[in-house]
Image 1: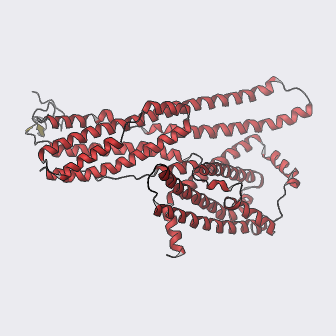
Image 2: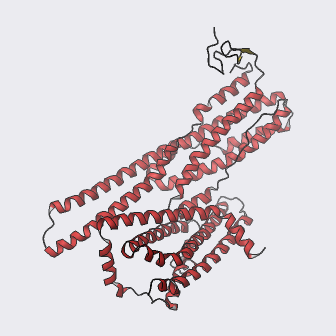
Length: 297
Length: 209
């Protein structure tokens, strides 16, 4: 894409490009965090019952024969119980470690996304205000951005991750509650901003952008909290999935939204024809956007 | 608004609660049944447990089938959350939800384990005759009871949180939540009454007792 001449537009484009670093999409492989304890609990409980069950006939035999249990009889049982204990300890530490890491990433990407978006919307408002200083709709963009700065504050991701290591289930629930609540509020803010921006662009004399339809999830964190308690923790598996999915979806929608807004704001670029494929290439581009061939020669 | 309308809207509003509780209950029950089956068949412990149960049957003071005593025992035990002082604290907002979670786990694990144990010792037909006729009413009643309690916790927790944080309480939403709680509770109690009747007077007949 050719560099715009206006420094504010350059700033806008730079902020939008920064989304690769801030709007981190997390893999669904992180589902191991809620699934691992459930699977481990079933395996450990089942095996433990099996070991105890295998003891019953042995105890009967031993008491009848009135002999001291020999080492070969006891050794496999002790080894089995020790192995289970080891597995439980490993799973416990794995859940703590991966859980803390996942919550660090979740809170960190939330912080970075909110901060970048606040900067972006503030710059966008400044740019539009120069085009139509008296527009009430453009003033509304400013108020919305100020609200976002006040309400969507940075949370210490490292502290939450450390707390998760020490008070795993409680901090996990509180962090999940906060992340769901934040996304719910952010959805509302984004929806209002999108509506105000469409009118503001018209006031500033820009064509209407083809913005993607905004879908708000409206998940109720109190409902999710109670459902997690009432289902013995099983609902947290789904809740955790929504935390991964909602933020990933939001970042994808946000990228489309920003591209559309930038397309409207950028002045039309003069184009030339690619010598290889015949497609349109913006002036100043080093490579053809259609076939990827070098255009410097 | 008729009673049917109230019930219909209560079910529509609480679809997620019913679904989540059902999935949790049936998945725990299935896993418990499978684990019990694997453990009992691989260790040969089923016969030992059965022998122990038969030798201690005289100590278990359960009223005989076809009696009002058995009906009252089953029915009052199943609706204990509504009257029994020991179990009524599940209605304490938010805190009680954790006790419900524990109860759901215990009930699902026990039902799954009992079904697997009876299936091994008496065969699948006997198990089906012993559990299905009242189970098809009792388990949905159990799920509805939990749904009504979950709705109560969501509504009261939201209102309390609003009060504590100095925000206005959404009174229409709270009223709607309480109305749903009452509607679902009434349906669950009625279903428990029918299930207890089937368990007392129909199931023993099917089992040839």
